[in-house]
Image (tube, rainbow over all chains, first blue to last red):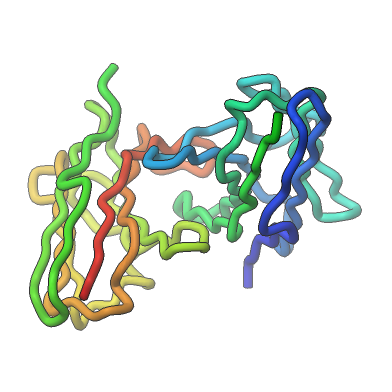
Length: 113
Length: 115
């Protein structure tokens, strides 16, 4: 069965510090991978996605993620966090039959001054 | 471009009552999804439409949940009767067409509280 694991339920970082959010997936083949952000009261917004090719992908708002096949991981990074980045972050895997997303449980990010 | 619209934004009902949610996807998007997001969890797909046909409803509790997309545009999700465990945010999303590489665009959701 497909699954997505986000080991960190909650992370707190200082503004200006670097950030890495972890995501591991369990799937037989290389999946399509996504990171979404959800601000309070808002719908999910796509940050970036990986399908194939360069394993380091750039997204919006200064985020990037690296696909590591050997580790079945797709970690999200940002070199310098802004207070407005405080939100819930979801990693998602799409299987290749019908665009069905499997979401992780999310990581809540708090940014302190 | 207008985004995915959902209404109502909030709903509070007693258990065993009925409730309906409405979604209007982005114009021209053929694929529509309904997700349930319980507090502290990631969204879980309930049902997926391609135009007005159901592609996947394997995780929809069909004894109490129903959904339709009659004209291939907007959609309604109904719960009848509601249970306490149905308290969640119900998200609607749409994509241009059914393909794994197509981005899904999400609406703001409807927060349901069942008392």
